[in-house]
Amino acid sequence: MVTKEGKKLSTRKGNVILLEPTIAEAVSRAKAQIEAKNPELENKDQVAHAVGVGAIKFYDLKTDRTNGYDFDLEAMVSFEGETGPYVQYAYARIQSILRKADFKPNTTGNYSLNDAESWEIIKLLQDFPRIINRAADNFEPSIIAKFAISLAQAFNKYYAHTRILDESPERDSRLALSYATAVVLKEALRLLGVEAPEKM
Image 1 (spheres, rainbow, N blue to C red):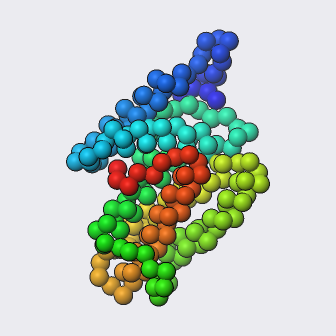
Image 2 (cartoon, rainbow, N blue to C red):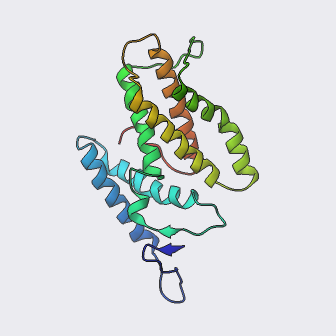
Image 3 (cartoon, one colour):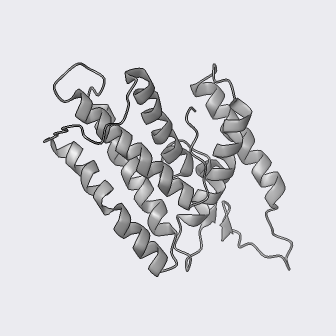
């Protein structure tokens, strides 16, 4: 691991990053972003802690355990890019959609989606059990983290191009796909020891 300035961390040289102040700074940065995005959020401190701590964990675990990485707290806590907050925000966005729709999961529903972006997500969801097994077999949590990023990216693309809440024959199917995506994102984060806030 090296710092943002390219200096290799070394306890002998005194070039170290202390955990406690790093967590405090990550939480502070997360809270600032949350206040900018959702100033009316009631439990800002609790969510900021989940996002800040989760950001550090996720950034560490998304890197192959045999490789080093640059320690860049600003990048870690960003809501954009391949970060924990990006995945958490995708999950919270889905929860917001489901609340607005008052969606209740129905295992007997007759769902049908034929567009390419829906199937991109469906294929990722189908692959999740294999992803877990591969991560376990290789003792490599980065496999799960990278999968979570891919799924969040696929859903955000879907969200940008699909009017999920509009009344249409596909509405229930789109909501069911959103719900399934949220379930898998939350489980992927849980396996990495990262919380999934319902609101952000």
